[in-house]
Image 1: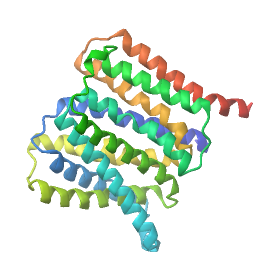
Image 2: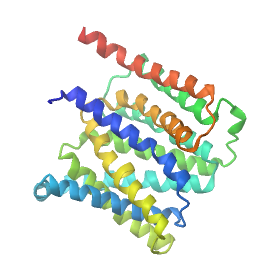
Image 3: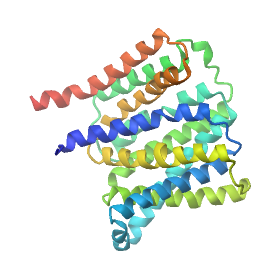
Image 4: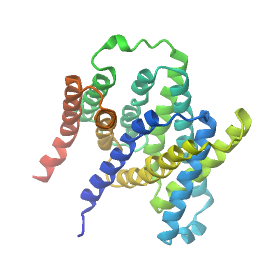
Length: 296
């Protein structure tokens, strides 16, 4: 079966959203003894290895020899942005309220829309504006369960660090549109550079340790699937669609994650989840109206 570019883009983004939504389950299941520097190193290493074997299977490794110095500089710069996103995010979850961190974390789709205006010169429309606002409202309703009192924002300094991590990932996503090389090789080099950066920070601010048996399972799943393979889908999707058009649909991630947590851990189902999902669906529809109308 042959898929059109648009259908492939939808499949890539959908797979990425599903894999990223699994993060909450494994965070809840895994009680890691590693600090965020150590976990970052091992996760990056497994992500690199997973993409290396994909590139090896696709016989794309020889292409790397043809890359110019400027291409490598761009790839290592993007790898640094990706590294900073996770390192700062893990720091936030370790030191602040997880609900507050999650709210700040999902400002990155909003940053994508803003950065796309200046870097990619994409058109900014009222539809994109309201799509992002509706999406953020949907996420906020779900993670706060409709109770604003859950969000105290006491640790402003830590939350600013998380805000910086969100900006780093948004910048990574937007600049990735400028990468025209094979997507597998690009993501592999991102994680190779992230492995180097995380090893340096681990040696500088922490210690090198061998993970316990239960830690290896979480590291493998997070490194290979939730990070490694999912990023390949994300980059491929961004190569097909406008970054700002994809951004509103990423708000499905925490909502889907909430439903998965309900199924796996038999948590209570709240009506506010459905209200939040409605806002996210509206966000996606608002942002797609113009495209559908042009097709007709």
